[in-house]
Image (cartoon, rainbow, N blue to C red):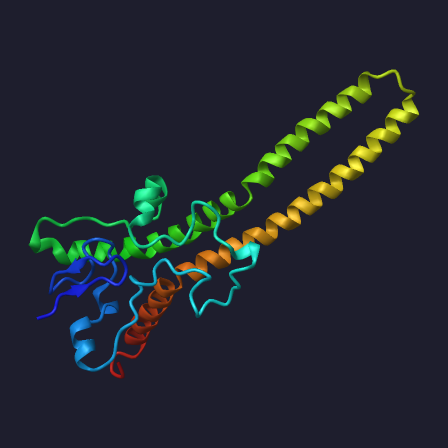
Length: 229
């Protein structure tokens, strides 16, 4: 009998388990690769495409667009390579699961791991969005801090100078106008990058999101129409 592997993390799943012991992915979402090969078709595993980005053929984004290009260290590393290159980021996006050492309680642990899997998916989407956005515009954050310091230095020099009061007011007005334009431009740019980072996160975890939606629809249909299902 061919072994079953989790489509999320690639771990071997014992027969009879209702969830992956490593990441908590429900077994109902996992198909038997051996049976699939016998039927003459190949399942498209999310384990294979877990790290897909704009280079994949089904991506709606162009790889030459700066807004959708992955920043360092969020490059499209193969499965397992991210943990070795950047242990903290690999740990941050790792699965949440409980390891069961008592076979009599395996079903309870699987139910808990299913819940962990659901909330872990939401956490990974939010965390990936924030981390991707930070590494994308870290230079902008540094530039804003330098601009605040430089702006404060100029205002201090103007106040301590021997200029006339009207001249000081005029210079302060010009500085305030320039600062307003800069802050509006930074806010618009940051909003665009934030939306792009959210799209990248949803794009990266779309296979898992799709399976969660399908699973909830199936369970909701079974609850509402038990005789039909």
